[in-house]
Length: 207
Image (cartoon, rainbow, N blue to C red; front, side, top):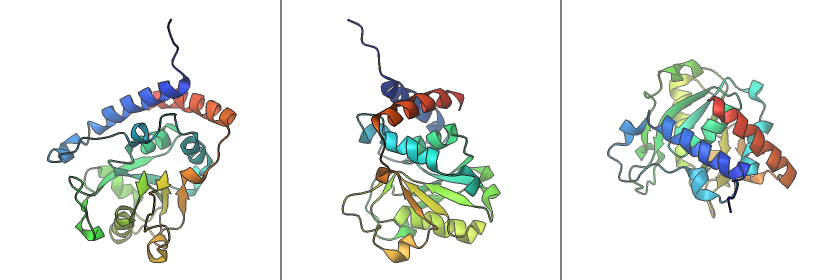
């Protein structure tokens, strides 16, 4: 018997293919990393997360000039934003070889990988990350965007806060952002999810 793959499975596969293709442009910057690139949506979900798609669709694009993807974790999310018509820029921020970092300024940071990043100067920006425990990475990015590009209080998209995180209740850190949009807080009905998966399956072919 031949089983037809569901639209959700097809979207998983197509997004993963797009991720690998886009990541090839940035792979050289991670040549010394012991850990390979992982598609975090593929890692975290058995069924395609409709709440992510609904949240992306619900964000008003006209409120922003562009979005900034924090490589590598946010890449699959950024591609979904791009499929929905967003202008995406890229930078690197994060741990090296998964070493624990207690100070955000000890994180690797590189904003030279995307020449177009200069276009965000003094603009309205949404930072895209996949999740957060300490807030070190998005806070470091917010600080750098403020100091180098005059971006004041960017908003932040996360799929979810990590369990028992120390970021969500830290007012000093959360106040670095205009607002924090957490996709996992979004409820989505089965029929909505089906429609959203089909919509993004068609859209992502065009990026």
